[in-house]
Amino acid sequence: MVELTFSDFTLAIIGGCFIGVSAVLMLLFVGRIAGICGITFSLLDPNQVKKPWRWIFLLGLILGPMLVHHVYNLPIPEAPTDNLPLLIIAGLITGFGTKLGNGCTSGHGVCGIARFSTRSIVATITFMLFGFISVFLLKQVGGF
Amino acid sequence: MTKLAEYLIVLLAGLLFGIGLALSGMNDTKIVQGFLDIFGLWDSRLIFVMLGALIVTIVVFPLILKRKQPLFDSSFHLPTFIKIDRKLVIGSAMFGIGWGLVGYCPGPAIASISYGYCQTIVFIVSMLAGAFICSKTTD
Image (cartoon, rainbow over all chains, first blue to last red; front, side, top):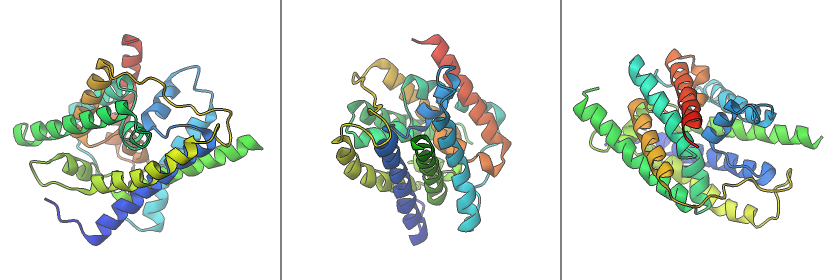
């Protein structure tokens, strides 16, 4: 088990609260769920693409981390794996799966659970379980 | 005027989301894979991030949903479908596998664009392709 420093722990809780406040703003002001896949994938739909709020939310999502690393002087994370087939396969099934299951960690995990949605609770348990299995196979069997 | 206020709030919400992900380490694929690695060197951080977010949303969402409408719109846009079907379970299972393989879920992948890694772009383009294929092949 990784020993978390006090700073790791505090930043995790505070960072989580920021995400919660973001979801609260979206629901209170525009009546929407802050689900990243829902917001992103509707940009693929020609009927939805003209609605600017989705682009604006994603712009904020991209700018937010730049702000943090600049102002707070937090180190930038290391690059993800450079295994190209792995990146493509993971991307494809993440996109297919979150579209089919109508949500990911933000929509189901943060917003859905807070609405006590049974679908979201089932989705969250399922993707966590399969996430554990996936990393187990990748590390213990695949040797990555 | 209301439109401008709406866009500013949405921008702020996006910023807060991105700040939260970066602060908490969730844009780091190693930390996320560490959380999913329960038989290896387990990193518990993601649990605290979810707890932090849920403390806020579980307390405040019910208060907001007592209202008849959001501040800038005439109605809430919430999912109405409540059935637990195969699509939900299979889709979530697929997502879980993809999540573990690289350590990105859709939010952190997009929030990591500014780090300038081409791996991130490859993942996002594949993810959009996957969602597109899904929307064309299932109803």
